[in-house]
Image 1 (cartoon, rainbow, N blue to C red):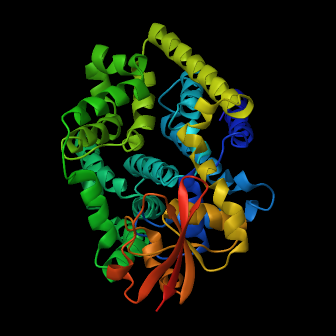
Image 2: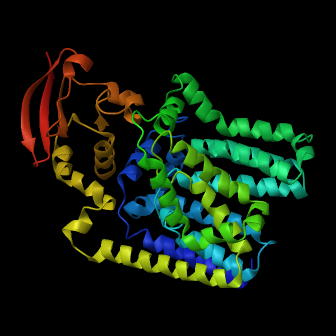
Image 3: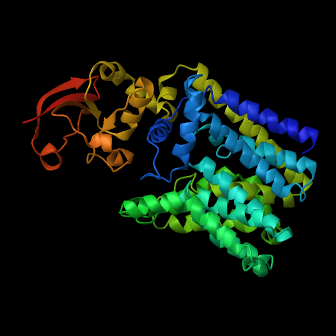
Amino acid sequence: MTKSLFHIFIATLIAKLVLLLFIPLVLDEYYYWVWGQNLQWSYFDHPPMVGWIMAIGDFFRPLFAKGIRIPFVLISQATIFIWYLILKDRMSENKLALLILVLSFNPLTGWGGMIATPDIPLLFFWSLAIHFAAKIELSPSAINYAGLGASLGLGFSSKYVMVLILPCLLIYIFQKKLLHRVFHKYLFISLLFGLLGSMPVLYWNWTHNWDSFLFQWRHGMEAPVWKVRWPFDYLLGQFFILFPVFVWPLVRRMRSFLANDFSTFALFPLAFFLYSSFKGRVEANWPIVAYPAFYGVAIQVASKRLTNGMKRVLYFWVFCLVIVVSAITFVDNPKIKKLRIFEAAKYNVVLEYARKQPNTFVHNYQMASYLSFHLQKPFCKLPHFGRRDVYDYLPQCHKTPDHFFYIVVSYAKPDFDTFYPGYQVVDAQPFAEEYKILEVKKL
């Protein structure tokens, strides 16, 4: 890496570490922090990697609460470095600098890298697998085969979307005429390391009736009611995430784009989630694995004029980031405070009550996670109420005392007769407008 590229790389890393201080922790981050406090082979909602990394992030919490994000920011930056390694011999220094900046300030690969999510380790191992696949083409060594297998396995232990890289690799192999590399003597090393890396997820699902696999499949592919707008929402969302100026090379220079070694890793995930949008609702971040390759290929094949347009988009993203962070930090406006990024603040009203009252359960995993983080003692959601989540699998949450208090939203009517026979609500008091506290006793 040249000195100028190194300076850009370090500057963007420092910028992220500073900016994360201004972005409030979101509810999912509290939830993943609880995973890190209850380390398991895997979890119901997602594979275990985000919880394992959060356990490391907890070492930074005594310095400042948002320090739990530091390992995720470092991993996100490492992903950008991997793409530098992949493309350093294929692009000029100016285009490499543009790629580093685009990946650093894009709303999902950049801003999203400052928030702890399963996408961050997923994107890291996805990129690492592509890196080792490209290295195997030039040097079929044991360490490269081991690196590919480990990346695939650990990526699967990050998020199930990792399975999409397998058809991408097959297309890459046929495109590059590398079938002889597949049946290489070191293939068993890839298979071994891949199996070891994915073993935690496989073991947990095997011992829990494949609950997580079934949940994710139904979540993404079996919506109870399909809405015709979902594919259009997906296409429109991806168009603006990728931005027209980056999509234009695919249209204007389609032959060059498709002939690029890494176009499959960009286009296949996007096509798959377009297909799945006809089965269920697709979140904007689900095809995130496609973005580094898409931006990389687009910048590679772009003309000088189009590259200048990409730079203007980059300036726009930076401008938007400054505006968003400034609004979050300095503007005290009720409409801004209603944004999803401030959603966790709604649970502040129950902090003092929960601090003083032992044997308190709450109505959902978000509130339980928020209270556990801020009060530094475990709180549980009552299993069986609400959608299934990690709390349904924590043994300590199934130990229901004979007398406890239950904080629920004011309109909730929990069915104790069905799920907790022998328990009865003996008192119900409204609390902070939105909630009520139920006193529950075992008769």
